[in-house]
Length: 265
Image 1 (cartoon, rainbow, N blue to C red):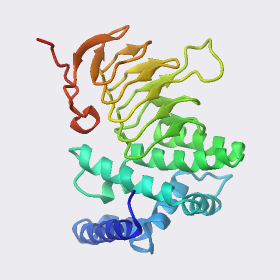
Image 2 (cartoon, helix red, strand yellow; image 1 turned 45 degrees about the horizontal axis):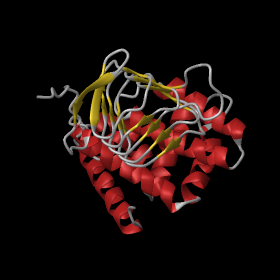
Image 3 (cartoon, rainbow, N blue to C red; image 1 turned 60 degrees about the vertical axis):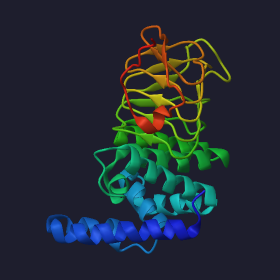
Image 4 (cartoon, rainbow, N blue to C red; image 1 turned 30 degrees about the horizontal axis):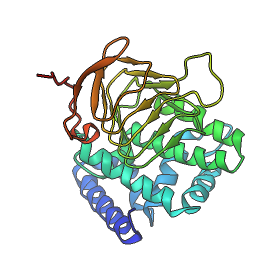
C-alpha cells in the first residue's frame, strides 16, 4: 500500500508536470489551475474533478465534493487504491506520458474512482446515492459498474467505453480491462451470479464473461471471446464460446498487455 509520503511525492510530481504544461499550452491555463494547481492535496483534486464531471443541473458539484471527500477520507485504503490505479494507468498505457494525464483526461481511471465512492456509499447503506454515482458514471464516462461489485487496486480500464461490471462481480488487484468488456450474469440466475476475475488477468477488448465463473490468476481472455466456464490459471482462451488456446508461461498478462494469442507447440 502506498504510504502518505509516496502519495505526497506523487502529488508533487503531478503539480510540477501541470506547471510545465501551463507554459506549453496557455489556452488550458485556467483548466490546469482549477483542476490541479489550486488544490492542496491529491485527494482534493480527485474529489473536485469527479464532482464536476458527475454533477448536474439538479445535483450541484459542490454537493458531491463533500461526499467524495468523506469517502476518500474514511479509509487510507481508498486513497491508496486511487494512487495505485493512477500508477497502473501510467505504467501500462503506452500513450500515457504524464502521471497527470489519467487524473485529468482518462475516463477509465475516473470511472474507477467514482466506483470507489459508490462502493463506499453502498457499504454504508446509502444505496440511492450510490446508484446516482453509478448512473452518472455510465452517462459521462461510458462505464457501468454496479456499486456492490468488489474491485481491487492497480486496475486499469483502458478507453473505458462500453465496460459493464455486474453486481456480484469480483475483480482482484492488477487486472487490465479494455473497452467493451462485460462481466455479466447469464440472465437466469439470482444471488451470486457474476464472474470472479483473479489477479494479473488481461480482459481484451469486447470480451464477454457470463455467470459465476472464475478467471484464474494470470489468465488472458482474447478479444471478442465469450466465456461461459471457468478459465484455468495462466491460460489463454479465445473464441465463441471460448476455449483454451495457449498458456502465459509464468507471465502476467495484465502487465504485458499483449493481445496476440500464443500458439502451443
